[in-house]
Image (cartoon, rainbow, N blue to C red):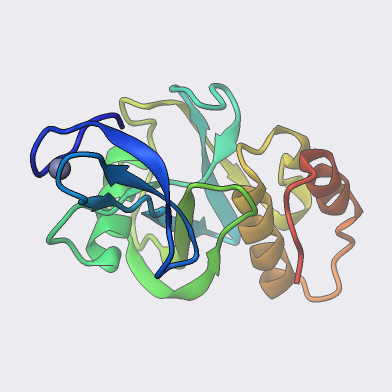
Length: 184
Ligand SMILES: [Zn+2]
């Protein structure tokens, strides 16, 4: 981001005393360009005790597994976005069961809001941005091939909700490898 959306002037890193931090500030009109994380809505659709994951057909992390997720559009509720993304990416019409949790990671650029979802009569199929869809029991989660630290964290929570006391050694190893994830 190089230019001011208000006047087209050049933006530059500048110390803002009132906020006690550096911001992108327009050198012409003083407009402050705030940089904030984007909101991602996600679902963990569960069919017969197995979670629906999609293998990503786009960068970043092409070829890895994640749940259906995408950016919330302006004017859309997070719930609507979660259902829409699930329809687009896994061709599933889901109803949301409950909020699983909210996920962020240090240095990350998104806030992931993830819902548990059910699919009354769904047969998942890969959407245009997915290479394939898969159904995974708690014991079958492909920890080493998950897309992001937030993906590991959300699936860890799902496994714990489905199998209290489950052995999560592989999940912890995957998280340690990413080196950015903080488990609470
Ligand atoms: Zn300006």
